Amino acid sequence: MHLTLTVKVDLERVDEMDLEQKLSEWFEWFHAHPELSYEEYETTAKIKEILKDAGVEILPYSLETGLIAIVRGALEGPVQALRCDIDALPILEESGLSYASLYEGKMHACGHDFHIVAGIGCALLLQSQKESLKGAVKIIFQPAEEASIGAYKILETDVMEDVDCIWGLHADPTRDVGVMGIKEGFVTAAVDRFVITVTGVSCHGAHPDDGVDPIPAGAAMVQALQTIVTRNVNAFHPALLSVTRFQAGNTWNVIPEKAELEGTVRTLEKTDRVLFEKRIREIVSGIAQAYGVKAELTWMPGPPATYNDAEMVDKATEVAKECGLQPVVNECSMGGDDFSFYEEKIPGCYIKVGTGKGQTIHQPGFAIDQRALQKTAQYLKEVIVSNM
Ligand SMILES: [Zn+2]
Ligand SMILES: [Zn+2]
Image (cartoon, rainbow, N blue to C red; front, side, top):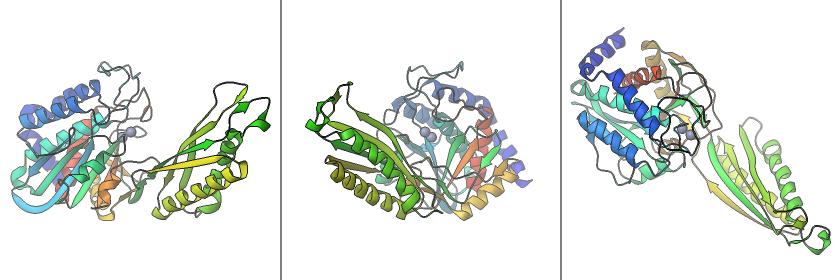
């Protein structure tokens, strides 16, 4: 009851801007102008322009793209952050939307345009009630989430040093607008990547005895790597390994010199990440020896698993109910999000926001139901205020 009233009052105060209409206009602009990781220059300039026009303070910041806005409350309180990632994907859009991407081969197919606008809306709503706010709220418009490194880069600056906790959101096209997926504990997996280069000796396809064929060795590795999941990892720990690329040779009658395998490992528990790297090394080296090839493993660790703080989850769930939204406990995803880097320093809560059922993220027909824009901006504002 109380919350509904607060929302109404705030909206009246920012009403001159006709917030809903503005959010829609901005959303369509961002959707039409997608930029890839680390290339978010126009996006950054547009966010800056909107926030400056609304009188929102922008903090000094050392990265080339992205920005940090701050709303300072008049009263003492904690420093909270809201993370909104801003980059797009190299996908040719097929949504059929009137405001589809103007840049061929680039698309906001992960809903980060929605995150930007929800973050802007939240900033404006907070700004409109600064006098009654406690502490401060930093809204982080983060570059390069799709490259899994933007959060890490933000953490290398000093802007997060005084932050006590962080909120994050992600568009969820498996749920209707108004449904909020909020779960305690693990919500996304750790993302590690590996490349294995197998080197043999090239020869005529009719005389395999003249060379050393890297293909059977690579194939044996593909098979054996799966046994890490079934034979080495605790059966109660979610974990997976996918070999997603296996390239060798370029014709039918030549045994190639090299085969290259690439893939990803997804885990929740830190100990399993260590276990996978160790077992992959052992399996690759053992099979290489058995097949008489040379093999080299490159292990590229990415973001850890995202883990939602219990108290923050309780607040987010309670506020969703008070705002007339429908909180549901979402399942943990084996996808990743570099939001988890922030959580290595401070508690966080990552909320999956229903944006209307449709094609999944990273698909050319992915689309956001715009009715989610204002609802999400208001909800995030209320969640943050509830935590002051
Ligand atoms: Zn994505
Ligand atoms: Zn995303």
